[in-house]
Length: 174
Image (cartoon, rainbow, N blue to C red; front, side, top):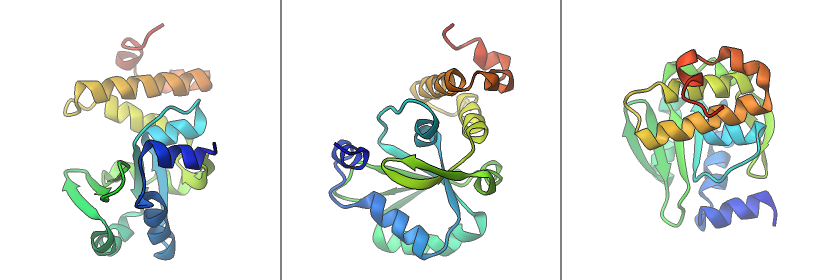
């Protein structure tokens, strides 16, 4: 089974949400990159996730939002737009936190879910995971997943360990 077919089966993506979101971004010439768990999966041994986290160029968000709202269900949260569609368990989250904007020009094409997508540099994916793990507003279970993702990245690239704050290293399994 191809990665793409597996992803579509796991997310029960009968509405082709992934393909439709990516097509809309590409047709609208929106610069973006993958972050979050799928960003980690691009560099480390992949694990299943129903989320696709993206950063869009700040100047494109307001331009693309009405187009997204015509096609999908769009929910606004403090620092994100969540995109979903009937017929798919996939959740696309567009990160609006301005700290992520510098990730876009440093992104490179990598295989994500059987598709060549711009993925934030490994160091940037790690930084995003550090921010998430340190966010007291996150659910405890989400922070645990972020810690696991941090572990996966530093196992893959041990030199990154020196960039991880000690308070996070203390919470990782030896």
